[in-house]
Length: 140
Image (cartoon, rainbow, N blue to C red):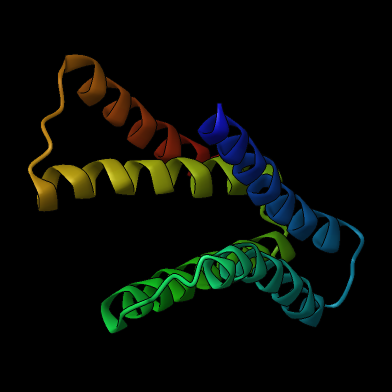
């Protein structure tokens, strides 16, 4: 139950940050508004991770810190790209499925290529359909 609650919190908060980018774009706020907005979201996320780690006196090695920094940079880059697409008037019904579906597709393919994870028929069909959906959305 604990993991379900944590995943639900992650789902809601992650979705809300993307929704906020749509609000910034739709309200015609200046392009530079995305940086303070994303700074607040990432600072809150960092605090949600750092405070429990400090309370438990968890030690972080250079390897963990490095991978965390790489993932944070990629995440921020993705959010900035999403905000830029929205400001360029790409419809939200294209931007959000491409970013969400593209991330799931990338993780699935990376698991197969880099970690040798096997995909059964249903997983392969889902991956192919997801890839086709992303392509079709780019034409709308």
